[in-house]
Length: 361
Image 1 (spheres, rainbow, N blue to C red):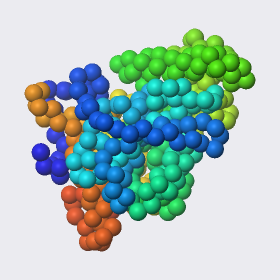
Image 2: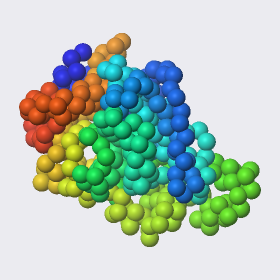
Image 3: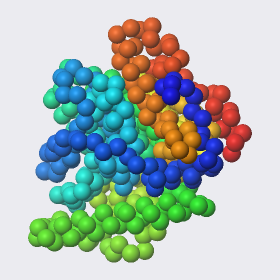
Image 4: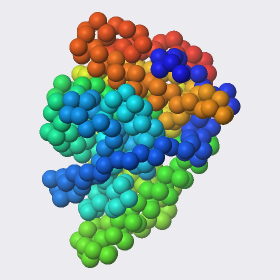
């Protein structure tokens, strides 16, 4: 399929929930032979990185950031790594703390604003492949962290460009949205997974006899009764990571407040029917930096964007993202490329799709 063709939602997946749920349940992700690297952080903890693609020092490199309760094994991560390799790109998939199959070593974990960990990874990649043009792609939570980091660091971000997909721009409003209607099914899933994440860490500390770390988790209180994001983030996320409460965490970690500071070409891909995000949580055109291209689709769900037929499903994100990144590499060597509509790296808020989305609410 043409990598520049418009997204046409699969007719056989009507509505946002089928778009959101089909791939996690029914897609067979590619089996990739990747190389794992452990990156040790200054605080004594670690992050695991999974490399794929060519080893050439000058090959373009994409850092891929998964979403909440995901990992480098998430279907959208594997699919993108495969497509990038087909274009001659190397990629490295980050596992946030405790997401690689092994609990991390500190009471703290990861959250939607953990841009300091992203900064450490970017510094490492620039040091080990200094000749490679470096880009980043973030999904959901990973997209929020990426946009926050870009806004905080501006021209000093160390990246040539970035893509963020299905971003929870306002964490407080998204915590409300996921508690409404069918979206409560997702909320129950996330609560179960996040509580299990903390329990596994407690068990790990008991095995290691890390009494101080275990005590830090036990001071948070019992893990039962955590039904909403407000509950979990107020009792667990905020105190573990230096926030006063859930509201303070949401305010300081929400990427919408950082968008004006972005200084590198950045593509945001969003669906107006995302069941995690209110329409009014999306940024207005005036909030975007001049380097940001906001692509708003009426349909697509949350990290869905499935197209094609039931017998041959397609994945728009795995067409669009590699094509846009390739256009950015080309634009870096040819300034006229930035005006090409197929993969422009200049500012453009897709007003036509935004208008259709408003009508579809």
